[in-house]
Image (tube, rainbow, N blue to C red; front, side, top):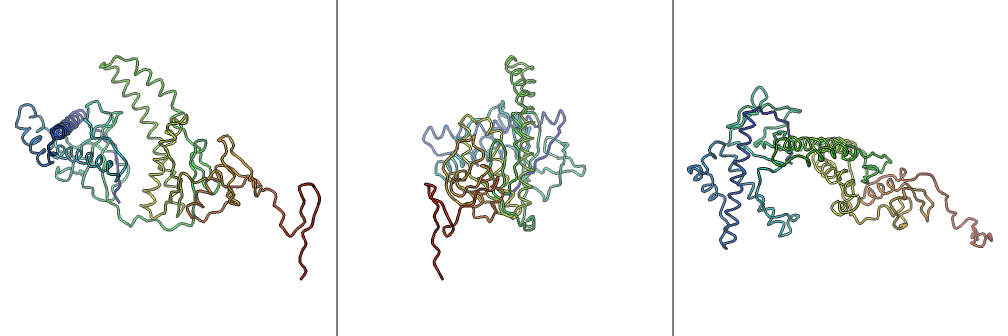
Length: 406
């Protein structure tokens, strides 16, 4: 499988100018190619091929006075911009055919976009120097903070500038089957929630960090300061960067929490079961901010690729499975319950159940995992009398069921 390794870059002043020039040239070529294809579509003509666009918008455009500055950046960056447009069209048409989730048609890029990126392939002859710098054509040797070594030699590198003004270099690495972990004995079902981020079928409850809620006061002040600055002023640019850095800090903390928890669960369990939640639907309710703050989709995606990477099994059950309505002790469906009811008593077997732990156990059982329901019970309930033992009628009269003689 392919994995992406990202590292923080620290370009100096001239290098930032060179990267800004590369971002701008790649954006112009992308927009020119999109305009040429949309014009051909409006005229009823066939879409121009990538080779023809490359010759017209890159090779020939460099010879004109209007686009002569395209020669100041690496040609590989411009070629990759055309390939990005091909990918955008392919995803759009595959969505119309039902091969993938539907996506919008390709749109023009703006120099005011929050994210700018360019990609260098092996043809650009980029390299990692002996001193640990990243040498990029027509940019120079950029200092990189290496948090871990690359497991293999990458073929491409993508340079990204985010909304907070930070630079990252991203490498795509091919991994082999040698990373599989030794088999573990654990099997666990996970119920995702808001009061607790995750509840495991073994009774473990993981508190929700609520990164957005905790930083809400600081974010509100940064957004208020931004709204008060005049558009186009330098003070507005400074306020925008301050707000973007505050949001990036929240996103980074959430991502780190997801990585640590997903890695721990994958390492300790051979099989993991989760519920396929309708996050888009829940994000349209009054709980929208809390749902987005939890980041369930990102967490499940991390579990999915880490399970495939380390030789684990991840099972997803249907979102329509009544995990909160079924007793994990006897299997009787007790009906829906309001959200404020966190502990309930089964009307059939009398077991007193924790709503979240009971749901986690049912998630594991629905996925076919062999888990114990011991964590689902809060306190033992009364044991019903057997049919061959003395019982009581509803009117209070005792009766004894006859036992056949041997």
